[in-house]
Length: 186
Image (cartoon, rainbow, N blue to C red):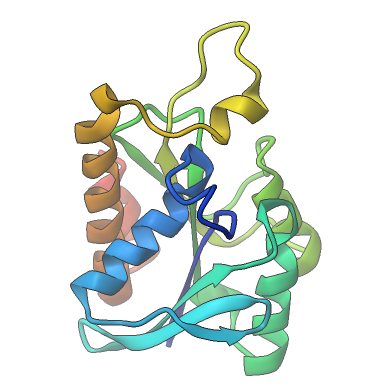
């Protein structure tokens, strides 16, 4: 079994913001495979299904971004799942919009959701898909930027990022993460 955690903030006022691109990717993956992410468990919305013959659980923490690790830890403890089977999907300002970067370890890089997961799991070693949202223009506050919606001119690149993320996630379920990185990090 694999478990995929998409990071974002709950509530309709955050739904289309840059910080919620992880939720957007999970929603698209769920649509592709007729999975309903509606079960309310472990401080998260959860959907279970079968993707490419692999039992897969899609998890959207409802704790707000900065506390995402609470939901990840609750799920780990309740279901006794392995961190090796986890993939975290989230927004990354150091990756250009339209691109994704896969990693299997590393620091939080200033991302509070990842910082919380590292804190609650006690390790930096877990698989990640970093979805590009690009950096704000100089002088633009980062908090305002990540909580802003995508501009119309970014729509095509946003779609590309979401589709590429879903393709990478599907591929990763039947291939090693190293193979997935080789294929999608280009």
